[in-house]
Length: 245
Ligand SMILES: C[S@@+](CC[C@H](N)C(=O)[O-])C[C@H]1O[C@@H](n2cnc3c(N)ncnc32)[C@H](O)[C@@H]1O
Ligand SMILES: Nc1nc2[nH]cc(C(=O)O)c2c(=O)[nH]1
Ligand code: SF4
Ligand SMILES: [Mg+2]
Image (cartoon, helix red, strand yellow):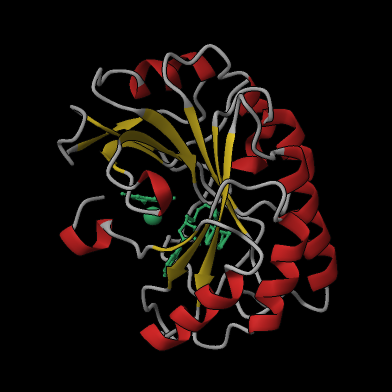
């Protein structure tokens, strides 16, 4: 079993409740969505190499043949003994659920960064990931081409599959964009409130046509969300502030 990997590097988690923890990042290519605010390049074709840091944290990369095996991925990702966990991100990592399942023997906790719209992939990984950072994509985030309900239900299903347990943490990140509707947020929270340890409202970092949100707008959403979820924190992308990967 092999999978294509875009890049493997060491950095500091820049989003959500684990901000500041040192992680090895494994970025898988491709995605099943096209979020209007996405900060991750889409330019991937299958003959691209995997970019691997020559030494962890150096920011200096060398090419590695793609696709790679689970064993090779872990050998690279586990080089730095100081990491807290291994972040599996993308693109959308649940497109590679059966591959991620093969990472069961990892020496560090696996941290899954996912759009939660692929419940079959969620089933594949539920026994191997220790931390789930699940987005809930709302109407304002993507052009769902009249299929929002299908994606909404798939997301709710994925949160149920990857719900927080004694073995696994699961929290939700919702990106706050200027045209986010409060009722869409509340509808989503009603579905997942019993499955998560916390909700993170992540103000969008402006990209392309998507602009800044006001603090008042975000605080108003936090007020409403706290009627449903006890732990609601506002945390921006911090890695962008100090220029780390
Ligand atoms: C690039 S995505 C990859 C993982 C997965 N596809 C997802 O969307 O959760 C990683 C995280 O970055 C967030 N993100 C992407 N672009 C952003 C932006 N411009 N501002 C704030 N968060 C952003 C996503 O919402 C997601 O929480
Ligand atoms: N430092 C850092 N933190 C992150 N948290 C989520 C990221 C992502 O792109 O999945 C990310 C990333 O790309 N870099
Ligand atoms: S799901 Fe994640 S990777 Fe895919 S477009 Fe949205 S933010 Fe980008
Ligand atoms: Mg990123």
